[in-house]
Image 1 (tube, rainbow, N blue to C red):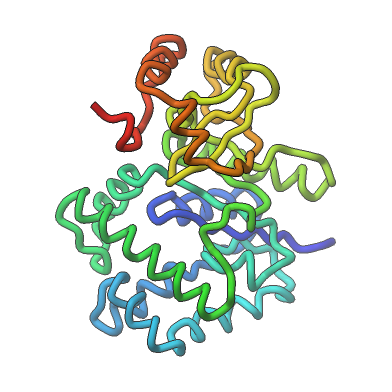
Image 2: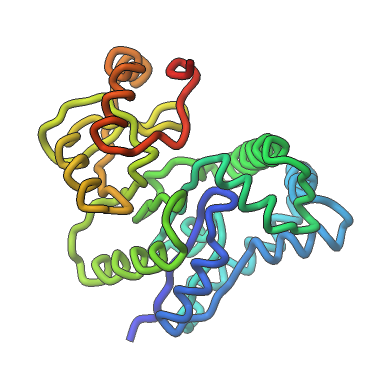
Length: 278
């Protein structure tokens, strides 16, 4: 039988380590984590993970230590869950998953973890450091490999972990992996209701437009309302590409529309872009 290979990439603090362990238990697979390796290297060198990322920008041997191990996994005859930002690239046969999380929630999780390699004092400091680290990684991987790790279209399945349990996330990944291996169709994105902002049409299947880190409903608002009423923790949405997403958002998403959406669904947005804030 073909070996299981699932790769987990995602936002910092999205729960990759916890979900990876749960998946291994469900599937009888082994866990390979480059995050653990990276943190160990940072501690070995007396750095924070952000400092190591910046150091790696001019010292490619750090990435080499990690990437060589990843490349070897493509032909490893084992069932593996790989917790790594670059496994989707170096292990192309893997079912690639991206776990995304609202930034303040990510920061809170990392702050509460109390890792010595990530010594933050406040949520605000953690948010700033996480954003800087993510930007550093994105620039480095683009320079080294010509890939955009923040392009969600790189992945087979994208799941929002902001307001759902690790157990639910592991269940959803396992279910989508089963569909993927069976050749069944599925919607690539599942997003928490609190991260969907009202903007587009009510009819049709749920879809969204991403702009500046926020997710705006492009279509299917009525179906989303029904899903929320049923208690769905995640909304399956197709992604739309707008010629001018800034214009779409400015024209279709207003404070009044958000207030009405909250009244109608009972869901308060997790965060608002600056133009919608009081």
